[in-house]
Each structure stands twice: as structure tokens, then as C-alpha cells.
Image (tube, rainbow, N blue to C red; front, side):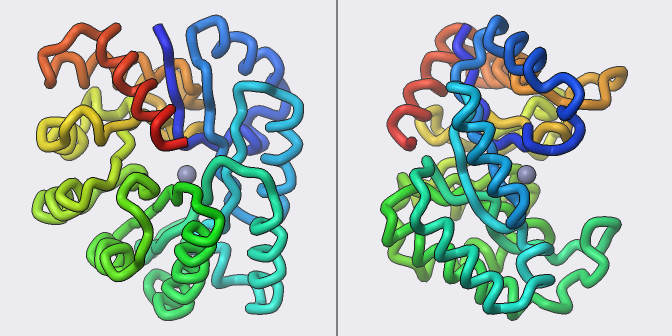
Length: 256
Ligand SMILES: [Zn+2]
């Protein structure tokens, strides 16, 4: 079975002790591509390093919205310039995040600044003609509206881990943008509804590893666990799981 992960963070310290082994096991399980998304300056460097070392890791560079507004504008622009010169498959992780929590102490306080950063990434995606992998949390409407106003081509937009309302999902799909589904679709009705709504050619699979493990007894997620997403998509779409895996692979090849 061919497994594709369009959104992972294998550069995170969670994998520092056994990264070689994890990559090896995932390859054996059928994983052929892991798009590793950078979240800040240090992470972006590490992503490039990993992509050089492991053939299945494909680099995407970005700036997680919460981190992006915590550096000075000059520093952000300098990083953007660095990213613009790299040979990468996509921009990510980028987007908007207004959810106040452990990793976002400011909530939507810097929404204006976040939008400015996101806008710069949209412009860069267009300039480089590469896909943009978009994160949005409690900012789904703003994100959709910003993308609608950009001149990015539909096949260059991948909405990751979308938890917005049904009418926004429809808007995303009507534009022809793609959505990636993680293995927590196994239990999360919101993601199941996206699978129901979306045509097969607009679906991709992801992990957000190390987060979002589909197994209650395994804390750290891995790309191979996407098998659970494939199973659920196959069930919802009434297709053979092998067929689903091949379709997702085709979608991946068409986009990246
Ligand atoms: Zn992520």
C-alpha cells in the first residue's frame, strides 16, 4: 500500500532519539513521501537537513502563524527571502491561528500581523509557483476569504486539518482546493463529514505528526498510521482501500 503524508513535523525533538528507525519502519510500511513542514527559522533549517538525508522527506518551509508574529518584521522578511531561494516542494506551515491556548498565549491579538505574514507567503507561493499548505484555527473564515482574494491557482492550495463549519468546507471544495485528512478521521465526525463532501480528487492524507495519533495507547504519531485514514476514507467512499491509496498518491503527484 502506498502511503502519502502531506503534513508532518519529523524535525521535532520527539524523533531525535530514533529518527533513523522511524524513517526505516515507515518506508517498510509503504510510506513513499512525507512532506515535512517547517514552523520557524530553526525548524526550517532542520527540515532542509532531513530532506537531504532521507529521500522520502520532502521539504516544505514556512512559519507557524503564532511564531511568525513573535519575531521582528525584518527577521520574518529575512527568513522569507531565505525560503524564496530554497528548492522546496511547498510552503508550509503557514496560515492563521486565533485560538488562545498553550501554544498561542495571544489568541487573536495579532490577527492583523498574522494576516500580513500569510499574505507574504501567498505572494511567494505564486512567485515560486509551488503549493501552499495552510493551517487555520478559529480563523477559518478569514483564511478562506484571504485565499479567495489571492490569485493562487486552486491546485496549489492544500488546506490542512480543517475544523471549520460545513458551509466553509463547501466553499473550499467549490474553489477546487484540496484538503488533507489525518488518521483521527477514524473517530472525528467533523473530518468524516469533509470526506463525505469532498470529491476523491481533492483529498490528500496527512498526520501532523507527532500530533494527532489515531491510537489512544500510542502518543507519538507516525506517517504509517495514515493507514487508519485510508481505511476510513475507503469505508465512507465505499471504495477498496488499495484504490483509495492509489488515488491519494495520484493526487499527491498532481499537486507536488
Ligand atoms: Zn502542523
